[in-house]
Length: 443
Image 1: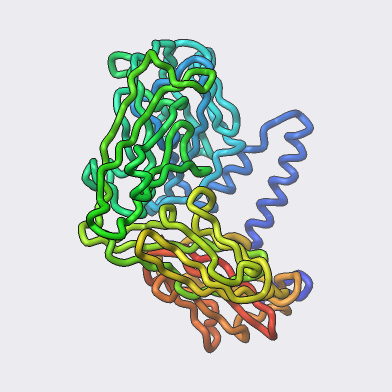
Image 2: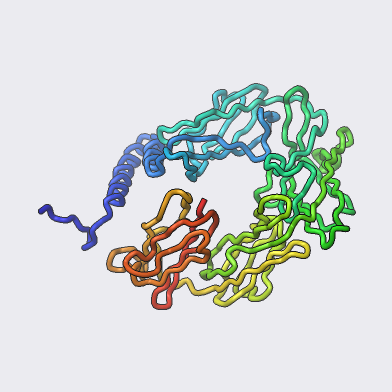
């Protein structure tokens, strides 16, 4: 019988050992390459692509970018990258410190973090490579100093979802952009735009706001559910071009789009309805709206969030800043409310001490609904995840939302996660008064 290799009395996981050996090899390679000013990224990326089973890359332009993509000299924009594995599933990739390239660096320059700068008239293609995987299609960008002729249209993020073009379902935040006409097929999302809605819309509780994820120049509009059908009225959304001094540029037209808030909202719920949160931990809860005219919608970014009681224990992000993101402040209980017009829903949140437990995972767990069970979540006592400290099969396990995922709570399979439905839940483990949680997202 061959002897079993152990480190400090612990038998290593084979995959973990392979990854550790790879890290050692890459470390030596990095030292050697650093000495001759080499680029170690291809080596590091190859380990990353193997770990993710990466098959394809797609370059992602800003959400309000149009196709074909035109920019003006001196203008900048930031690109990101999306990945797909061999099973056709999406994988998360950072766009930073990547090998981005421009086919014509005289026209477009690009940094390792995906920031493109337009230099002079012309067309250039942007590509990116991670390990041996190259972007499926380079992104073509044309730089043109053609003058703006006026505002061509106002487009909304709901225009491609099947919602009637001139209707706003209550409590759903829709992002609008003004499209500029530069002649021919040259259409661009404008940045220097002043947005407004008419006084009647304000009286009916419509709301314009920006968030950290709103593209530059765009705006978010939420139509609030009318308290009665008589209050349903038209909203006039207006866009005006601004000059460099921030004043309305009178050379260009004012463009308007008329929208109507329906009275279709029939129910509002907060998911999960109950939640345990650790001190210092953040967690995204969601507001789900039910409509009489369409399928259910995620209204998280459009409802008003508040903490009814227990504000000392808990905070929640508002519509304009991290909507629905909870942060545990101190031990206690709090009630979080989501409201829109006459409708509201609540979630009861208990904040507990984080204790001194830790999982063998430090990042959130993302599961595909059809992937099957996840069996690799383990919990340890103390500061080191070694076998002697493992408490997986003696800890008390729970899921905050069993309609999203369940976790086995008995026997020798505790910590075994089974995805049930799309959404987000928190998996917790508790042992001798200490507790730890991790976010699980099922897609």
